[in-house]
Amino acid sequence: MILNTYFKHCILALILCSITINGQSQHSVKGQTFTMALSGDAIITRKISVYDEPQFNDMIGLIRSADVAFTNLEMLFHDYEMHPMHKSGGTYMRAEPSLAKEIAWAGFDMVSRANNHTGDYGVDGMRLTTKYTAEAGLVQAGVGESLTEAREAKFLETANGRVALISCSATYPDHARAGKSRDDIPSRPGLNPLRFNVVNYITKEQFNELEASGKRLDSRMKKSDDGVLSLFGQKFAVGDYVTVKTTSNRQDLIEIASVVKNASRLADYTIVTFHAHESDSIQSIPAQFLVEFSKEMVDSGADIVVGHGPHILRGIEIYKGVPILYSLGDFIFQNETLLRLPTENYEPYKLGENHHVADFNDARYDFERKGFPSRPQIWESVIAVPKWLDHQLIELRLYPISLGFGESPAVRGRPMFANKKLSKKIIGDLQKLSESYGTEIEFKKGIGFVKLGNQLK
Image (cartoon, rainbow, N blue to C red; front, side):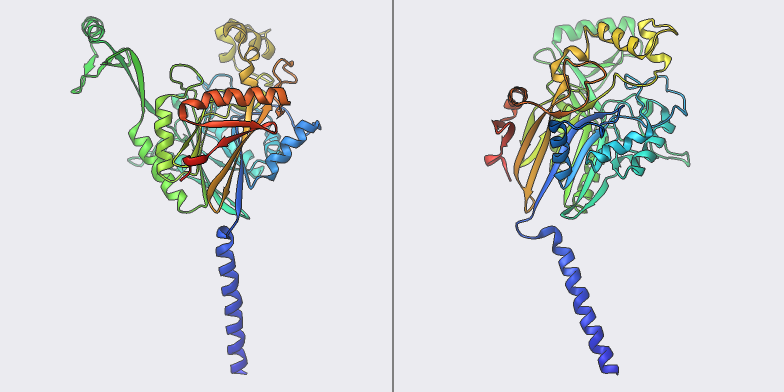
């Protein structure tokens, strides 16, 4: 009896050992592939699950077929329970809470929450969005009840690997930035910030004139030991030519990098995503600090870095075998069909009580010289699909999508695969944007293929 029990325990132990070994090897089986579907800003204000065009259905099928799908959720879900803040990220964002499930319906698993609209309706708006996003089954990162929580990685379990997501934003009204607790004062809820420093370089002659003027006009003018002049809220230094240089805030860079280092040892794949409107010389070129930040994240263990925010595509760089997508533009862009807007949106355009959302759209577009509707690149983007084999990047496909440039506000903003002619144009544009990084993109079979070649590890 005792002997039989002993053998039973041995057999059970062997079975459990076999299950454990198989479970541990599941994420490292030889020849295993892993794919992601990555998109830019999702500003959703209307249902998308009601549509049935072949180009739309095929796009949804692509997203659902990936092991993990990501988008930037640039929307707040609430029913106007709270007041708007005195300052927003632009248009005050809001959608019906049920629309969070539309993002999940489309096949997305993970969303970033740190962006310039996170704080449009204050902490309560952020919290309600967190609630409805979680109820939709989406993993979300980039916001929290403290800076520590906003910075931390969030994880998704899949059959072929564990995925970590770290989300931060360089563009935001300052009230939306999360803070730390000290001296037993509660921490400030908000988003994960990526701050940066700006220095204006001017000639020696210009610098001397500015310093002289500053002494007369601004008693708070300061000059650091390294010769940087702080005046009128800006910094100036002597350079060989007139230019502006940006660098990441060192504290933010170190803290976010430490989160990435930790996450990369706890997950099979780590996504770092940033939201940034900041540019260099033109809007399509990312600011210098974003390039610095992205490479630091790769050095810290990121498997891919995804940018969004300027509402247009930016170039692609392969750094140490890791893709840096400086901006994936828009995925859903339904910012024209909000139900209500607060007075802060109407006042700059002198719109009274009898003006409504459509009037605001028209006034803003006139002010911006026709604004978003007149710019084709706002409505043209890609879904990026990287593929790994045994954790080695082997492919990066770019699927062109159209959001309906030239259509009415009731139609445009919803994505679907672009036709062949537009697809060729989109990939051609992205190729030009990527040339300065040494990245080549080939257009074939209606999609773009990034030539990886010797750029892999």
